[in-house]
Length: 251
Length: 309
Image (cartoon, rainbow over all chains, first blue to last red):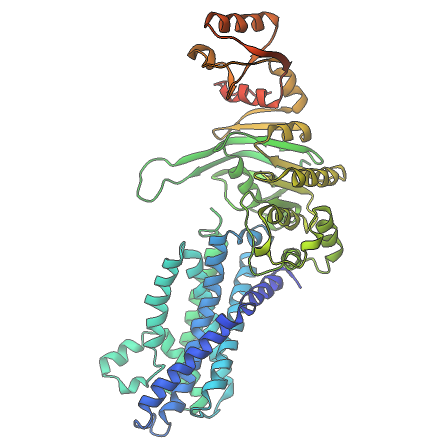
C-alpha cells in the first residue's frame, strides 16, 4: 500500500472497528423512520401518480443515510484526532494535501455506501422500488457521499470543539437533508417552497438518486448530475485548499 | 551537508481574537546547524521556544520567517523529503485508541510507503521492551508504555534524524535507561539526534553539543565540554537551617535547605562563607564540587545580554 492508501485503509478500519455505532445504528434509525412514516402515510395518494408512498420513501431514506454517514465519517475522524492529538501521526508524514483529501473522502464514500446498502436491504421489505436505471443510482450515491465526505473534511478542520461540530451537523446537515425531499415529492409543496427546495443541493442528489429507481423525478437527472457535480467540485476545492494551507492543523 | 540547518527562524503567534497587540514572539532569528551524527541538546526554560522550534522543524507549525532544512530539504518547500528523513517523538502523550500497538506501527510505516516492515517493527518492540504488548490495544497501556510506542512510531521509517521532545518527562528510571541505550546505539550507527529535556544531567551525559534558548533567542551554543569549562569551575555547597539574607539569596541556587554558590577560586569561597557567618548563620555539611550543566544553565539564564560561544 502506498501512503495515501494506508491512510484510507486506516480510516475505513477506524469506523469498521466500531461498526455497531457507525453502520448498525444508522440502519436501525432508518428502519424506525420506515415503520413510523410508512405506517402513518401508507394509503396516501400515489407519488408521481404510480408509486406507493413506502416505495417512494425507500430511496429517500437510503440517500439520507448515505449523506449523513459520509459527512459523519470524515468530520468525526478529524475532530476526534484533533482533540485527542493523534492527528500528529498523520501530520508528521510526507502525505500531501491531495493524499489527505482522497483518503478521507474515499473512506467516507465507503461508509456512506455501506450504510446505504444496509438501509436498502432492511427497508426494501416495506415497499419495493424498481431498478429502472441502476447506473444513475450508483452515480448519485458515489457523488453524494463524496460531496458530504468533502464537506465533513471542511467541518472537521474548522471545528475546535465537539459542540461546534454538533452545531454544523444540527443546523446545516440535518435541515438540508430533511428539507431535500426525502419524505415527499417537492411537487406536493406550495410554489414558494418548491423554489426554495431548488436552492438546496441535497434535493438534486436525492431526486437524481430516486430517478434511478423509478425513472421519474421532479427535475431532469442530467440537471441534477450537473449541479451535484458542480457542488462537489466547489466544496472539494475549498477542502483541498484548507488542507494545503494546514488550516487549524499546522499553526 | 548539515543534518539540520535553522536559518534565521522567527515565529510570532498572532494575538488572541478578542485582544489587540503585536502577538507573542516565540522565536527570534534562531540560526544554527546540527551536523550529521551529532547528539545535540536543545535546552531552555519553559516557554523559551524549544517546542516551537521543533514544531517548525517537524512541519507541525510554520515559521513566520526564515528556513529550516533537513539534509538539505526545506521543511516547507520540499516537505515530503524532509519528513521522510525526520523521526519526531512528540512531547504530548498521544495515541490512537482504535488500534493495537502493532497495528499502529504498521499503519505508521504505511504512511511512509513502507510495506512488510515487521522485522524492523519487531526489533523496535524488543529494543523498547514492548514485545509482550504488541497485540494490546493502545488504550490498555500505561503512560510509560504509551511513551515507548511513541518512540517506536517515530522510528518505523528508519529516519536519519531523530527528534525527541522531552521524551523522559514523567518516565520511570527503567524506561529512561532502555530508551537512552537504544537511542545511543542508533546514534553510533550514524543517526543524528536532537533532544530537548529539562533533565540537565541527561543532556550532560548524552549530548556532545548544546544550544540554550531563552525567550526565543539562542543564548549559548557550544560543545558540552566547553560550556562546562567556561562556567565558574566550582560550586560551594552547604546546608543552613534559616533563610539567607536577600543579597546573598540572589546569587545562590537554593533547594530547600541546600544552598549552592558558583565560585571561581578559594577567595570567593571564603567571601561567601564569611558573609554567611556575618549574617549570623551556620553553614553545615560544607563541600566544594565541580560545576555541572545545571550550574552552567542557571548562569546563562541569569546573564542578561546573550552570550554566544
